[in-house]
Image (cartoon, rainbow, N blue to C red; front, side, top):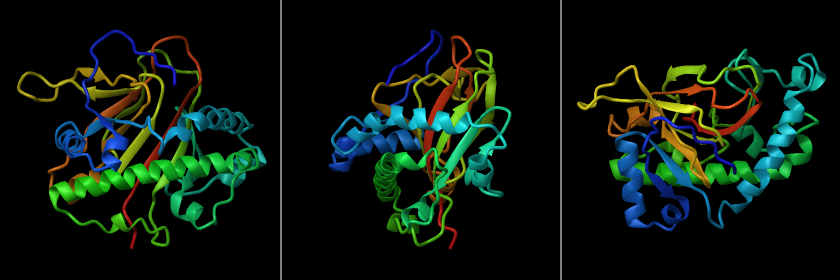
Length: 270
């Protein structure tokens, strides 16, 4: 993973070790809980044996994804991947294109890939499994900390949900600092985001902690992904966990294609 952090005010976020959390390290769990109760966003360090393959697979997934996104808009692969409603399949907006895989359908063997992505099914499977395992471990520790019991802890793909794995493609059309996605909080339980350029920003509060119109940039941390608490988890915790406001901007440097990947852990529908 290469990093590109520009000058300017950078957000200071905690870095939590996934391996330590998975091994039930009390100090690391406390760090996780504190970050989720305050900022609501933190770095998750994935450098460890459980997630080593993620960093090996990522460049190939993005290269293959770009082949798909660069197909003509009316190509058979794209038109057959279109879905209405929730963010499933292929979608295109002025700011970005993305392809989202429904975790429950995929886990049950019901998901059909476009021909361009089919050869990478094994790598996609490893990455989905790694991100889902990380999300479930984080969710379990946060639920234990605030004493809530969520049905989603059963991790049952036979129960319908909108949990998804998303490949993102931002075309080289945005000027530096251009707001691509306006300020928002995330729907769902947890969001896990892989990125290698500074595109996420958080509000910069004043000395009293009041939100201002200024923004601070979230840096890229080598070997880590960005995790944030989403609205549904914050609500079910009675506000003890924090869903943070954030936005997405174009990074510094010349206009170029930007890739991203997210895993969106969302509530059961039942």
